[in-house]
Length: 466
Image (cartoon, rainbow, N blue to C red):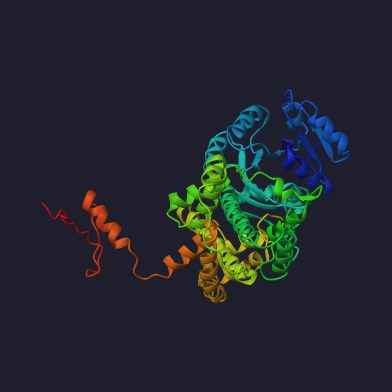
């Protein structure tokens, strides 16, 4: 039996697509899937549907491992969490020193760090690889964010570069982000940015739907997509708006309760832990949680109706507000990655990260292409002169859109969050002095003074009755 160059464990949607991508590049691959009651024929069905001289299929882990050339290179495409640990424990007896396990799922970066250290003691190499692009990306070329050592990554780099998406200069959209859990961390933040981008479009839809039909909204978004706002998410949103089932639009029949798999919440938690004001990711996560309160929303909506009506919404004002909010979202996401990079000594190249996100992933856009250059020239997106100009131009549009939204009782948490961030970050004197006084009053935490240049802490006996 000829030995395969690489193996994949798990033939779910992403595993199947990635396996077909690998074989389509003429790279020999072995695939494995468990044979539980509901998955007995998964491997057989995959081989039948994808006959190829480059694919071998297995239902026994020992045979699967024996089919691979050494050092073995195995991509785990299983659900994040305990399932990854379970598979690692199952496959370890059939591995040998210097074999490479690659977690291609959406694992938490701290789990990746833990597994890497555990396997290092057994002389087994481990990489955490964020894979973006969904089913079509995995099949035709995903964006891949790898975390681990350069020496280990170099052993799989050739294969990854062949299967990854290509940017406008035909360079592969894959990179070694940094050591240990950095690859999975940036994938988590990628998904956090994605949450906010999706929520922004949902808010634009809610706003426009008060006056415009599905066809009209789709036409508006189509025009937006021809501008600097062009993106994958904008493109699919206009297509979703036009999809019909019978005589009605399918969107009208979809329950307004949003699901989530956890990565957005992880991004929000990391932002809180690192002290980064990623307010738009937090707002987007909260919006999904609110959507799940369907019965309460239904009951309370019957008691609260908008009482003020205004003139028809100007789509161009909304476009400017949307553009403004997207700049804030991307700025906050990259700031979160930069802070994590400094905290964990990862040395992430933000410009290179933006480059691999220009193709093959869900948040690919014309803005992302622009950010490759911006982040090469500046540490922070909002420090760049061109972004500052766009930022300032959008403020008036934000005033108009926020006023209209609130008067019509339309919730736009991400758009409003972007403006609150803008105001806060451009305010020299904030009310945080009162917060410090409150903390000192009830907890004697101390405060610094404006009339003392050093960091000396002062404390006051505040109780006026004492």
